Image (cartoon, rainbow, N blue to C red; front, side, top):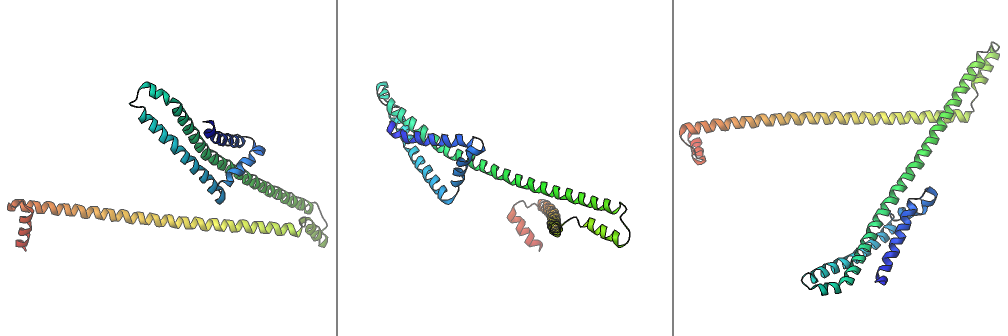
Length: 261
């Protein structure tokens, strides 16, 4: 019994270790997360599903043995049922361990994927926050530089060419590389704004087209309802004419119509 269930105990122990590592803080859970990510690759997925298939095949045997024991002891004496109690316990233990290992495999795999997605999202948010902070610092530096240049110009610098030179020197507080970088940033923002505006216009056009189609469908539905009401009215009129003529059968109604023609 131990020889048969020992591999299942080993698999369950490994799965439990991986699950505990996944629940540990970030530096410790990295190997488990990487292992869970590897199970979604082509080779890892093949290995994972192969092992799951083996466990599923192992689960079929305890289920079959349990059903066979149940039906074999159903109509037997109490002594015969007691003789099979050990085999029944072994079958129950094997089925429980196999099902637990199979369920833990998929649970740990899904948990590792969720934790990996959260980690990537956290890294992306940190990079975006760093970029925003850099833009804020650059904007603050530009504002301070512009304010310093304006203060230097308004401080009573000499008039004429000297004043122009002082103003140019104050305005030239930024290097050409920084100016080019800011211009590129502004151009990128304008391009993104244009793309967003184009997407908005496209969405509005699609929305208007959908509303037009909906209005046309409503008009068509009202026309069909009116046509249906008209056909019902004509049917009632025909029934009234047939009733007045004393013809109640459909065949007679057809003959009457031909006679009118």
